[in-house]
Amino acid sequence: MSLAPTPRATLAAALFACTLAFAGSPLRAAPVTAVHELAQQEKGPLLGTLRDLVSIESGSQDVEGLAQIAALIRDRLAQLGGKAEIMEPAEVFRMDDTPPKTGAMVHAEFKGTGTRKIMLIAHMDTVYLRGMLKDQPFRVDGDRAYGLGISDDKQGVALIIHTVALLQKLKFKDYGTLTVLINGDEEISSPGARATITRLGSEQDAVFSFEGGGEDGGLRLATSGIGAAYLSVEGKASHAGAAPEKGVNALYELSHQLLQLKDLSQPERGLKLNWTVSQAGTNRNVIPARATAQADARALKVADFEQLEATLQQRVQNKLLPDSKVQVKFEVRRPPLEATAASRSLAAHGAVVYQELGLPLKVYEAATGGGTDAAFAALKTKAAVIEGFGLSGYGAHSNDAEYVQIGSIVPRLYLSARMIMDLSQNKMK
Ligand SMILES: [Zn+2]
Image 1 (cartoon, rainbow, N blue to C red):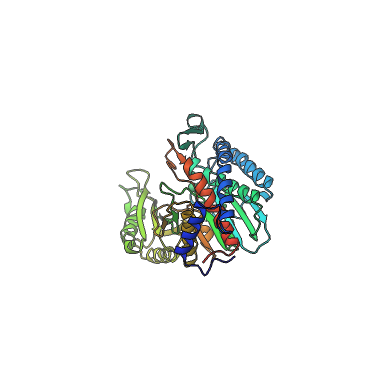
Image 2 (image 1 turned 90 degrees about the vertical axis):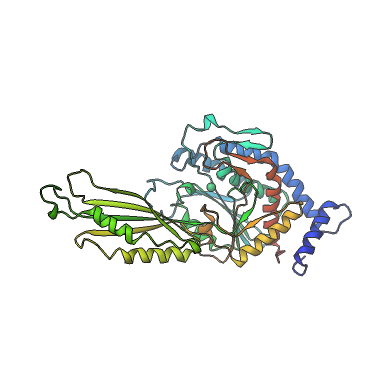
């Protein structure tokens, strides 16, 4: 049944009415009720999965822990009927802080009978170091489930597993392919997973990313791009007292460069470049042979980073000391996610679905500062990419009191399952 001709407000009202009075209601109410009941049934098992995931320490550099959690996730997805595998990165994008070995991914594909291609993404690595878990194990207190990494992003992994479980119990197979990708290096800017996420993203009709839904559970259509600039100057050392004229002072050149590279921000379009770290010299009495500086960059549009890099490269050609060597390197640590017509329309349908539960759903179009893997998924695709499908919670990266709201489990399971179902059956406007 196509819902296309029905105006959205009327549709929302109709669906909401169905949920309230499903006994004598038209056809549409039955599946909605079934999804809601199954979501309620999955709540307990989902908490069990969360406990299992939190109980494995999986910091981005913890090779052993990551292998252990990846095996658990792969096995769970395989049990649900997916073709599940642990996938090593095809290529690694080496950044300044990329460790020699990055975490693998878990990839699973569920084949359906339809045509739509939908991908669900989350990450299994955390910012925490091994040994911290014993002081902050999984525990439930009232409406909150606490634990290290529970909000960022183990809840996302658990939600995806149980969304798939819910659809399986419903015997729903109207999608073409349902792809799950869980990466193991998100917290170090996804050096290994980014290429795979972008490639798989380009093959989809929609990508749902399960980072936490924040405190109010809003969906996010835009996230900030994060970049880094590295400036390095090579000069020539010499005795500062006896023969300074024989040296090339790298610190002088660096200072000149920083002054001519300091006004590249365009706050009105969300582009920011700020030099934050520098280093030069070794001894007071030696003309410094080397000087370096780093800048933090933010952007809301992919093209702004490209333009910024071009400007940096061009400006450093203008030197104070012709004998110095100046190099600038720009790293896109994470591209920005930009709202599109496709993501707006899909998120609007999410609000309709949430209304069936009598809940409001905020949709944010302005980036709030954080960057996520959703942006890699969106880099080369026309698909709708939406961030923030995860549970409501708090305390990511805070290493104390990280929690998720248990009350958000049922609505979130319902939302993700219904979005997959409606998209598969072309029930979007
Ligand atoms: Zn995260």
